Structures are given as structure tokens and as C-alpha cells.
Image (cartoon, rainbow over all chains, first blue to last red; front, side, top):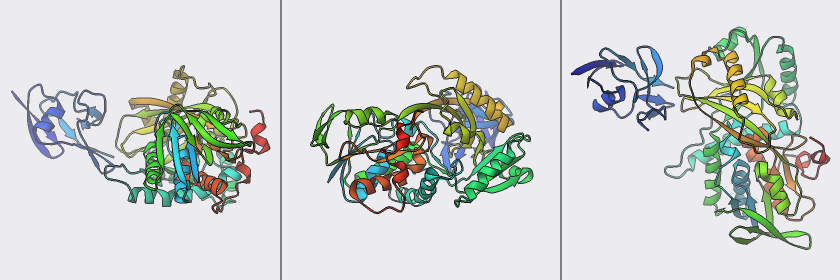
Length: 80
Length: 385
């Protein structure tokens, strides 16, 4: 089954059970956070490094590698 | 002229760089690595805001100017793959709660007298500088010249620059020294003897121990300082923001736990929260009390931090002298032995001018700074802390 999420202004399709990081990687992205001009994304992939943080449905600092993607999620890039 | 520098922290790296630039053959010894201890376990402060008029303030003002040129040079000259120093002239905002305003204003007035830029800011302007600051803060002082580097990267950059000028780095431990006619002639290490025309002790909190191993004497003690690191977030803190009681905590000789709020954000997005001062020797245990106290006080300054997750905490041992001034210059007893240690929480900031003073002491190169107040032979170093 597929699920649909929004990442900033884009519409992405993932598979049911994928993490948000999984959907973002599956859409060809390698980074989705900006820290002082540097691109950040998956580093550890196991919830430790906090590099893959995104805002999900208005909640900041969500680890994309740990949060399962749900149909209708609004995911936003965080920029420092 | 071969100079052996003991310690590859910020002070050792800065001394190695200054000595190499002046043409000396430099060998740097460290038992663990570049910036392996205090210089990677601090905040990278380059402050003028916390200095009361006096010798250390003069050194800090000169160092603050020197860092701007040095960081630019280190960043421009770096090798492929070497990170930047992350020098940020972010400025500092010191705030006062309750009735602390007048004392802070008096302190700032005394600093203006020696040329430190310090602008008084009222509540409305404070909100412009720091929109997330607690409503309970009534007034503050803006210090535009306060700056910061990523201390580990900046130390590595200074070391790399010294190495490009021919300095050698050896990972080994100092175990003793050879002397002839009251003069140090060699450093004994775990891996052999290294002949030296001069030796500079930059061993930070271990500088007292190293001084003894080298036949000299220096009273430098460790003080533990704790720092909390939050998970990365969009930028909400724009300056180095601290509670005016920080100034008192640094200058104090009290053995008990003292904490004072210092909050700032890093380029990676984390917020660094300090600070504490504890005289517990080199103990790594019982760190929960400072963590709890620092966290509680930080939320008083920035209430949003209450809902923030901590990623980790770390601590370092700050080297301090009984009279709270760094010891820079000749040992006085052993010819050829020099010290550069005891900078407490200001070692990163004072590194370039310390290097300049050491090059002056060892090689006779010119300096615009009066070395007298910092000489290890001064009376104050024998005082009871």
C-alpha cells in the first residue's frame, strides 16, 4: 500500500511502513536539513546523531529515521 | 634553536605557531593528541565581556583583535578536507535579573574606560537582539566584540599551520628532563630523549605536574566545567547570552559547585548551555548536580529550552592559577624552561597573544603586550587559593 506525504511544497509517495527518511531517500533526496549553509540528512540512521531532523505536522525536531511516515503527513525542512 | 612545546591544546598550538613563524625548530609533544583534553571540552570563547579592567583584560582585547586576522588566515590557508575554524563574531549579551542591573552597568562602565565596546540595552532592544529571551530580564549589555571558534577545529588549524612551517608533532608522554648547569637541555619522553634549547610547558591543567617533571615549579590546578548540548534546531539564539553572575563565578576561588548561565547556538544547530565551576580535582564522577542546576537556570533565561531535548553533556578541566591570571614566561629557576598555562576558561580566546608573549620570552621577538603581570615568577602565584 502506498502513502502520500508532503515535503515542503512537494508531494511524495512512499510505501506503507517506511520511515519519513525512507520516503525522502526513496524520492532521490540525500539531504533535507540546512545548518549554516551545509546540507544534512541521514548520518547514523538509528536515531542517535540527530542529523536527519525535520518538522512533522508542526512538531519540530522529529528524527526522520525513526518516525514512520503516515498518509497526509506535512513534513518541513528545518534551517539553521 | 630547537624548542620543545609540551601540550597540543590551543595554547600549545598557538605557541608552536608563533615560535615556528619566528624561525625556531619546534617539536610539540602530547600524550593524547591535538586538542584532546580541555581545548575540545570547552565552548571556544573569545570574550572581552567578562573581563574587569586589568592585565587579563588588556591581553583579551589584544587577543580579540588578533583572532580576527588569525581565523581569516587559518581558514584561507587550510588544506583540502580541513574544516574551517567556525570563527563567529556573534557578539555577547550579558543580562541581569531582578536588581542586578546597576551592578552590571557599573561593571560595563569600568570596561568602557579601557576601550571595551559595551552598549546598554533596555527591554525593547533586548527583544530585538534575542527574541526568545525571558520576559523577566529587564536590562542587559551588548558586547559586539565577543566572538567564538569551534575550539577543537581552531586548535587543529593552528597546529596544522605550525606543521606547514616545519613544526613536528609527536604523540608521547613527558617523563622527565635533563639539565646541565641549571639549564634544561633535553626532555625525556616515554619514547626517548629529545634535546632542546628551550622547553615551553603548555600542559593546561596538568601544567603543575609537567613543571615538576621538568625540574621547575608552577601552581596550576584543575577546575571542572560542564556543558550541555541540545539537539539541533532552527536558530533561536543569536548571541552568546549570559547571566551577569558568570563574571563572579570565574573569578571565585570557592571550592563548591558554582553555576552561571551561558547560552549560545552553534553553526550545526545545537544550543550549548553552560556553565559550572567545581574544584573536584580530576574527578569524572557526580556530574548530575551541575547538569541539573545548569539546565534549570538556562530555562530561566530562555523558557523555550524547557521543551528541548539534550543530545549529550561534556566536561573539561580548566587550568587555573591561585591569582586567576595565566602564567606566561620564564620559569625563573630552570633556565630555558618556560610556562604558558593557567588560562582557566579563557585559553582559546587568549591563545594568539599567549603565543606572541612566548615567542617574545623564548626568542626575543617584539611584542606590544606588557609581559610583566603574567610572569610565572610573580608573587601572586605563591598565594593561597
